[in-house]
Amino acid sequence: MQSNGFFFEKDRLRPYKSQKKYAPLLLLSRGAGKILMDKCLSANRKTQHLLSLTPSNINNLTMKNILVIGATGQIGSELTMKLRGIYGNDHVVCGYIPSAAPQGVLRDSGPSEVCDVTSGEQIAEVVKKHQIDAIYNLAALLSVVAEGRPQLAWKIGIDGLWNVLEVAREHGCSVFTPSSIGSFGPETPADHTPQDTIQRPRTIYGVSKVTTELLSDYYFRKYGVDTRSVRFPGLISYVTPPGGGTTDYACDIFYSAVRNEKFICPISKGTYMDMMYMPDALRACVELMEADPTRLIHRNAFNIASMSFDPEGLLAAIRKYKPNFEMEYQVEPLKQANADSWPNSLEDICARQEWDWAPQYDLDAMTVDMLAKLKEKLLK
Ligand code: NAD
Image (cartoon, rainbow, N blue to C red; front, side, top):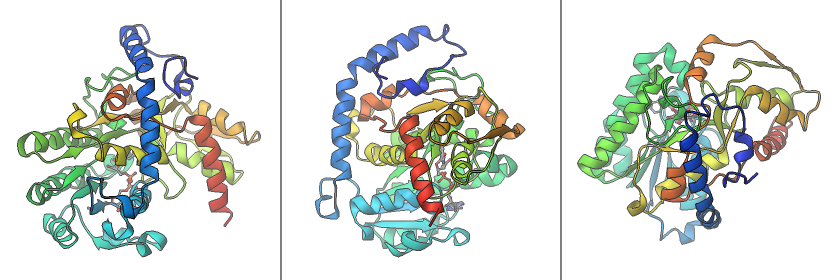
């Protein structure tokens, strides 16, 4: 489990396509990984601290009033609740568009405002009204949806980001806008993809993510706007279903497993991609935004990783607990083409060094928790 110095390395072991070519990099990163073990342990302690925060002891945190734009999506619906738990319900605004209004506890536990990222005026109004000092900008069309509507994807992802950054510049807000493993392309080193490497994506999703990274860095360097972000892997969660991405299968498979239905897999056997369980992803957002800025060499966007598997690996993990679960392949060409152009596994050493990133869930821990939580949810 700890053979490479990384806690969850076992799920990332598999035949690497380009092992030889990147061998020196692997050796370097694994050696450095060992040296970093102490730092990772200290990160876990820091995490415990963050998780124990309550509204009464938030004075040492840098963010006080937060706006989440795109707060009703897969990430936003959980991130908003997590932030409310840390900073206080009244301090975290759920920003939404009218066609995706908040429901239930998300709506009832704190303030909500209509906040369309394509309207700079609307963002500015909410920021002024709630004295916002940090914006989590989650508005986007995901990879599969974006490919069908490239101009809209650009309008939301990039024109929207300009609006957010301009408001942030005027009102002194920090900004988190996620990038993705989709920001890489077929020329990117596929295994243990380094932090700084060739990107050249071929999807509109990827093109807009690279632009997001560069524009966010630009606003930091030119105007001093405190922009930070991560490149999320495919995120696995049970609260809100994913919004039309290439990695959605890794969530959908759990719904089939819990319902005792056969799963039809749209991604072919042997296609490895980085994935992450939502609790780790949420913690990454908060820890990066609260990180000591003097330690940050990179800003937009950090590679983060916790597990990499192909559909067979995930099937085997689920079959440990559901031995009769069945899966059949019906590969969807668009999803497969996206997946083929993305890395097999990211190297996240910069995040570990610069802000003590360390994942807590490996494939098995995620599988156990997903099956239990989804069963509870679907049987309600
Ligand atoms: P999602 O599709 O579930 O949610 C996106 C949200 O944006 C929705 O609530 C939608 O209503 C909102 N939105 C759409 N148009 C808007 C507009 N004009 N103004 C304001 N809001 C608008 O996406 P998600 O999975 O929560 O992803 C959030 C961010 O994280 C995106 O940038 C995405 O690219 C990135 N990301 C997600 C994953 C993943 O696996 N979920 C992986 C990598 C990166």
